[in-house]
Length: 441
Ligand SMILES: [Zn+2]
Ligand SMILES: [Zn+2]
Image 1 (cartoon, rainbow, N blue to C red):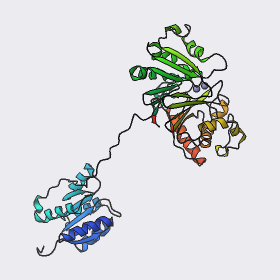
Image 2 (cartoon, protein in one colour; image 1 turned 30 degrees about the vertical axis):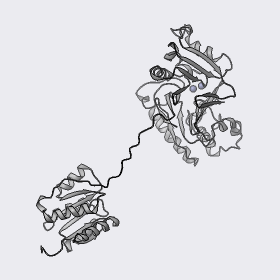
Image 3 (cartoon, protein in one colour; image 1 turned 45 degrees about the vertical axis):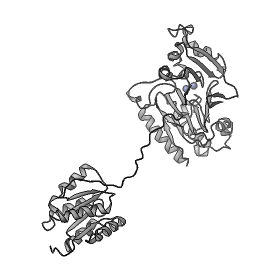
Image 4 (tube, protein in one colour; image 1 turned 30 degrees about the horizontal axis):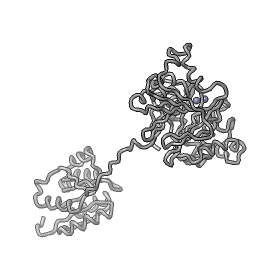
């Protein structure tokens, strides 16, 4: 090597902006720089004109940097060619591999070209002492480390199963407790339905919940009230529990809920309750709790069943666990337009759900199961999809899962939901609920 000749450096880099910057800086340091843009071109160039040093990118078209290194090391004439590897992949296993192939140094992208020039100078100055350690000197940017604001209003689903609780290894993902939802905002926590999920909700209220609990009941089918006798706050002095619901067609709410504490059904009786209990019948006027407005609409389900809507700080959430939308309809949901006679009959519900930010609505039966379940009070999945479109809801969580549908089945059913929505050319984010699910609004 002639000491008066400038050292020749071959830069192998497919991103032109990077190779230009490197070349510019190295030239400024007095080096002669040649640039090629892929591994094949690199090997051709080395064969005709061997450089004194190579700057080698790893991820390149045609032949990647590792292949180039292996090829160089396999030939006696290039076996000892000094190579500095530049890569954005800072993975120790890969870097070790590259060093084992005799890379002189590894520089992690992005780097300041001046850093590279310093390494190159070091190499030509004191070649024998150049370290092999990786030094990432990326330009420092302030770190973005967001944390979840858990004080934001949110819903928590304590129970998401319909009909009857289930348990077993095939239900671990979605859980097995029946209907119970909480809406929490500020210091308030409002409960909806008293299915078996209410038991755990009660334990959490004992720990740190407000002493005045508001409980809204959609209807008094077992899966929406069966947790009530196990709701611990009802036995604790100092708690006040206000239960809201429809008048019902027969017995009233108080006797239906409290009736579960009849001595023939349960070891503790109504007179053993220690909390102050209030029962409020719903009417056309919404209920206001804290800054939240709760209104209701009748659902298509046996008895006096209602759906609830919470409006709070400009956001709206609708809770509709039981609603057989378009009862008996088995046609293509694409054809379900506002002027369809069946849709017109459901107009109040569609208007009630219009543009809600979050809809929690059932879709209990896939279309192939629905024919046998018409009139059971639960929606055909395709019809529920049609409702989500008609009401142009912004997000949909499917709840009230059928006790016969295990995790594997529900996973397939969710995929079917996405497929139906795609068929309808309608995009809405849709998820399946599970016990313990928390969703921020
Ligand atoms: Zn139900
Ligand atoms: Zn029901």
